[in-house]
Image (cartoon, rainbow over all chains, first blue to last red; front, top):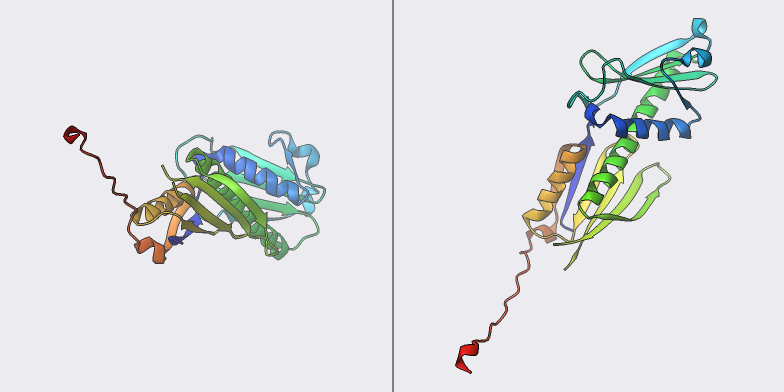
Length: 157
Length: 68
């Protein structure tokens, strides 16, 4: 071995397409489907009895202006709605709404989702960028603790 | 040409731990830094024994053909 590096991912809003893809993968896995932000009224969960929490997506930063500030990603099922958006400072936010849930439950769900989205984001960025550097995925797996393992291999120039 | 390998573990909170192997010397740290730049902020880098090994050099004898 040569060295071990530990990295905290930062979700750059310039990489919005990667974030969209990561969010869709995570939301799909927990049974929420994408909803058009402009026409999501038809799938609104019972809005009057909704509980709502808002969370900052840890380690997000604005790099470039490839998305509009009012751009949103909305996912929903019968009882939950999750909205990814940018706040006025350009930071990414997650809003979780649901009926029949306590604030603490929604906050915990939101934090789990935020972590998984960042995990997927990191996975997609690594695979995409390392392939461009001639490193190929030779093995990948997910362990019992939900850690993603990737082995990349290439040949020195 | 030796193979260079990166073993990556991405935790559920997104923290990435990457083990770079097959690259000796500072080039290893350069690749680690490049990886950090792609996805976020480097929290730590711990070199292993291989890191301190010299890069491989091979001497080649060139025969002086003018003498023949």
